[in-house]
Length: 338
Image 1 (cartoon, one colour):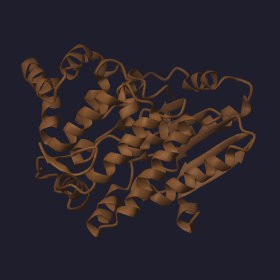
Image 2 (tube, helix red, strand yellow; image 1 turned 135 degrees about the horizontal axis):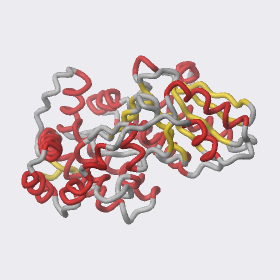
Image 3 (cartoon, rainbow, N blue to C red; image 1 turned 180 degrees about the vertical axis):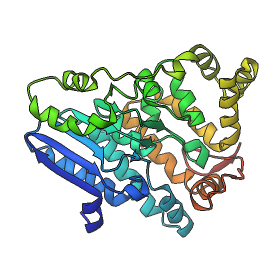
Image 4 (tube, rainbow, N blue to C red; image 1 turned 135 degrees about the vertical axis):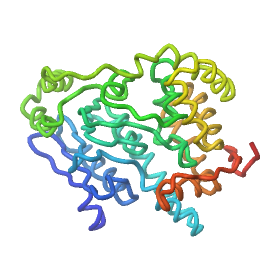
């Protein structure tokens, strides 16, 4: 573990509970290769430690994890350093797989922003706790990329067409929406989230679900906005093609449909095509197969003009005005006109 990673990933075991804190608050805990490797190493070492649970949280309230450090990936692409990007994605996906198969309950405490790679750290674990400050999203189509970290496995398995909607539009979910979709499993108020690890340590013989439900207390969770538009959402995003999705949204003409259509029109056409195909195929793939397919796609996608332009507009110049090109990488490599 590098000195930097040792500062950015804080880990210890107390009273049988492994506790990990993401500690890069100024960057909203955006994941670097060193951070991912450090996380994976900690979890690998704890495979041989008597534990009742592992709890993953953040040292700051603004973000759980805003995703991977995609700006650095762009810099690698511009420099022609494919190896550095390969190390990041391969390490990240290995960590996602480890979390999914971890031997003890893995509990993520999502307080604040949780996007992209942040969902990769949380959703593969058995227990995903959200607070009233939680905001979840897979916004990759807006930067010329695609939902990864196993999203092609977990998004298609959400109810109805919700996964396709979230993957294509990058729509943000609040705590109520996250619970409704199943991306979150429990709600705990922000002022009680620091008590989770100790509560689990105090009750080593109780099911984690029981402990988390007790911490939720009587704190209300607002009604899900997605639940209110579920019928229209399933009809529109359950269509077989992107063109038909857009046609159905135009036909609905509701405020929700108009906003969803605007999100599609603002996204990279290349990313929409990749994402639609990836999610459609993901329903019949295992998590390991999904991660392998995503890794193969990263090798071509991060070299395309849309990725370089999307990250520039969102994270470098921050003008939010990308100029997209219509090109699509094939799974076998290379670029094809759309």
